[in-house]
Length: 122
Image 1 (cartoon, rainbow, N blue to C red):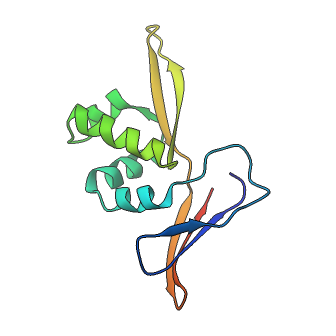
Image 2: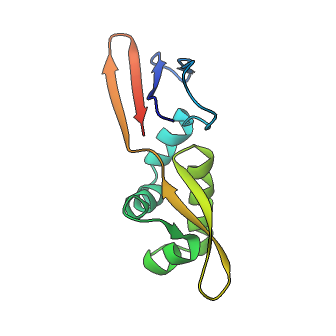
Image 3: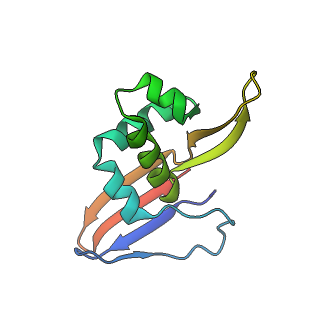
């Protein structure tokens, strides 16, 4: 997404997206999922590492103090929320590995008289 997405929500569980007619075909960030994931320490740790470099799930398991299941579960949730993207990499040994990288550069949360605003930019 080259344009930033804005989300305006009343002080409740309903979140509404503003339509961007200039947006491309890439799926937008699922704001409720992203906010939920940001409250998860494992997801935040994965985002911190992946913001520095693209890595496979196996490389993440080796670097972090997380179980393999936790890494895969959080990667899946972050990818479905639109915060991560994956691509296939062929290792020198011929194995194909899915690598993950962060596609959101910033998320800015603000409170105002109209409710909660979350701006996501790439």
